[in-house]
Image (cartoon, rainbow, N blue to C red):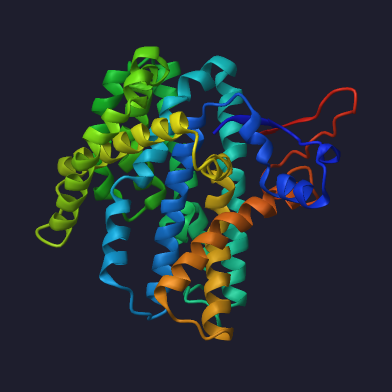
Length: 378
C-alpha cells in the first residue's frame, strides 16, 4: 500500500468542471508510471468488499434479497480478502529494502492502526447517535471492542489483522531470517490454530490470513519477471482459467450449502480465485480498458475505511425517506456511492485539506512552487 502521487495542478485544466473532477478523483494517477495491474486488482477487490457490506446492510434491513445476489456474495467471499493479503505480501520485500525495521513498523502503524482507531471510533459514535435509523446494535461497550474484538466492528477487523500479520512476518523474516517457504508452513499451522482462538479476533484474524501474506512474498518475483508477465497477459491464459474459476466457485457454493468447506479445501479455492483475479488484472492492463478501476484501486484503503458509513447513509435515505425497497436498486446505489464518495471526500477534504488528521498523525508539508509538491499515502 506504499505509494506516492503528485498533487495535480488544477490551473492546468481548461475548464472548471474538468478541474473539479480531476481533483475529486485524483485522475492524475492514470498518468503516472505505476504498475496498472496492481491498481486494477485493488479496484476489483475493494468493489467486492463494498458489495458484501452493502448486501449485508440490505439483508439486515429485512428486505428480501434474490438468491442470485446471495450466492454472488458467498462466492466473492471465497477470495476477496485473501487477495488483499497476497498483494500486501508481494510488496513486503520492496518495503524492507526502502526502510529500516523500526521505520517500517512505524509506517505500518501510521497507515493501518492510526486510521483504524480514528475511524472505528467515528463509526461507533455515529451508529450510537443514529441508532434510530441504522440497523447496527451498538452500545458504549463497543468502544472497548476496538482493542480486542475488531470483528464486531463491521469492516474494521482487516486493518489490525494486516498490521499484526505484517509485523509478525517481518520479525520472522528480518530478525530471525525465516525463509519464505518456511513461512508457508507456519502460515498453515496458524490457519489451523486461528479458529480455535476466534473468541479474541484481534489474535485470530491475522492467523487466518497469514498464509496468504506468506504466499504473496514467496511468489512475488513471478509478478515482475518478463516471462511470467507474458504468461499472465496472454489472452489464452485468461480464457483457459475462466471455466476453472467458474467451476471452483460453483463447487464452493455447493459445499457451503451442503456439508461445509474443509480448511484445505477453502485454501485451494481461495488461491485459485486469487490467481484468476491476478490474470484478469494483467489482461485489463494490456487492454487498457475500464481505467476507472485503477482510480478506485489507488484509493482502496480510503474506500475500505469509509464505505460502511456511506452505504448505511445511502440505504437510510433511500428506504426511510424515499420509500425505495428494491434490493437491486439499493445494492447498485450503495455500491456506487460507497466507492465514489470516499474517493471524493479524501481528495477534496483530507489530502492536503483541513481533515488531514483523519488518516495520518502528521500534517502534510506544503511544498513550494519551485519544487513540484509530492504527497505520500502509506
